Every structure is written in C-alpha cells, then in structure tokens.
Image (cartoon, rainbow, N blue to C red; front, side, top):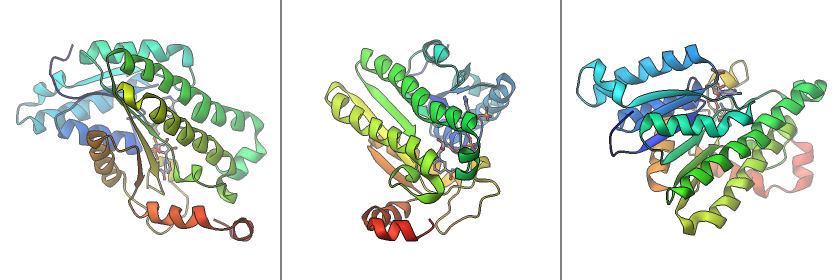
Length: 261
Ligand SMILES: NC(=O)c1ccc[n+]([C@@H]2O[C@H](COP(=O)([O-])OP(=O)(O)OC[C@H]3O[C@@H](n4cnc5c(N)ncnc54)[C@H](OP(=O)(O)O)[C@@H]3O)[C@@H](O)[C@H]2O)c1
C-alpha cells in the first residue's frame, strides 16, 4: 500500500495516448497514480515506466517509484468489475481522491454506419459504461466527503457534425452528464473536470488527416493536470479548440448542412 498524503489518482486508460501522458505528468508532479486497464502486460509496462519517472521526480533511486505507482485491472466493457477495480485502486494507493476516465473507443462514421454490432459496442462503451463507471466513482468520492471526477469527452460532442454523428452523440451524452453531476454535487464537495480534446495525435487518430490546431498528448496532459488542481469544470485541449468550437456552435443549421466538417 502507498503511504503518502499527496493526491491519489486512479486513471482508467493510461496505457496509451493522452491517458499515458497524463499519468506521466502527474507522477512527475509528485502524485500517487494507479493505472487501470484491461491488459495486465500493458499495465505492468506502464507501471515500470511510471516508477522510473516517479523516482526521478522525487530525486531518488528507481526503486523509490514503487511507493507511488500501482495498477489494477478494469475493462470498460465489463461494468460488473467497476466497483472492484476502484476498490483495488483505493487499497493499493491507500485512498483515492481523484478518478480520471480517459479510455474510450473510436471508429469512423462510415465504419459505424456499416456495422451495427460495432456501433452498439461503441455507444455502450463510450456512453453507458462510462457513465456507470463515473457513477461508481462519484458514490465513492462523495462517501469520503468529496474529490475530483474527470472524464475525457470530445469537441465532437459540442455540435452534431457530419463526420462524427454517432461517436459525437455518445460524447455529447458524456458532456451533458458531467455538467449535470457538477450542478447536483458541487455543493457536496465533488469537483468535475470535463476534458474536450480537439484533434490530438495518438493511436486513436493514427491515419486520420490532421486538421489545423492538432495537438500532442504531452501538451494536453499539462493542461489537464492544471485543470485537476484547479477543479476547472470544462477545458478544451489544445486551447485554440475553445474558440474553434465557439464559432462552430453558433453556425446556423443551413451552414452545417452544407459544410463537411
Ligand atoms: N485523440 C483525439 O484526437 C481525441 C479527440 C477527442 C476526444 N478524444 C478522447 O480522449 C480520450 C483519450 O483518447 P486517446 O486518443 O488518448 O486514445 P488512445 O490513444 O486510443 O488510448 C485509449 C486508451 O484507452 C484504453 N482502452 C480502450 N478500451 C478500453 C477498455 N475497454 N477498457 C479499458 N481501457 C480501454 C486503451 O487501452 P488498451 O491498451 O487496452 O487499448 C488506451 O490506454 C478518449 O476518451 C477519446 O475518445 C480523443
């Protein structure tokens, strides 16, 4: 069990992409991190990397990182395992005050329209199961008097758009859920942080054409780590996407029907 009085964070989906960059950023800032994911081998590889970084951040030898990094199995496709996964993170960190859900599925609009089974799976993982996991985390954080719940939504949820109708619908649901939870439980001590990435170069976007303002996971991670400290309810990352989406949200429907983005 980890024994330290610092921030204790569980991150679901930290073996790759923005989740991995965030875990690295947080251990670099001295937080204790439990990496949750579905593949035991990937988890151990991530933990080994994080322990070296944690030890370096603490100015010690590599072995020191063992007391700041833990792992636990959690598959977003298996909601029956969510409570046990969070309990394992709590036990291994010696407490839990922040839960971050960054894991999700992505598929193109064409692929989802062509495959109802894939569509059902994505909608289930990216909305229903993500909300169930957040609800398990919310109950746990409120029971200890408060904490921070952070979820990665997407700019795709801000407006119905031709290339991301279905994935965007799931993310719109997540953004609405996070706003509602903020309104309902802020006074009880729960801080909600909804991350809305624009285009970020990770495995999820590999092979897709990068638009202007595409970002890197490390820069996003720094923004997210700051938002976790401040309890900022909504952040766009990279930052320019806030202004891009402000414009897109105000475009009239007849324009949205004609344009392709
Ligand atoms: N990249 C972008 O441009 C972009 C834009 C908008 C929003 N987002 C959102 O930002 C978040 C992070 O995206 P990313 O680009 O960093 O993704 P990524 O590089 O594909 O990484 C996804 C992570 O989620 C994990 N994961 C996937 N399915 C899982 C499951 N069933 N159970 C547990 N873990 C699972 C993966 O673990 P495995 O190793 O097991 O696969 C991996 O660690 C996602 O919510 C995504 O929708 C991304």
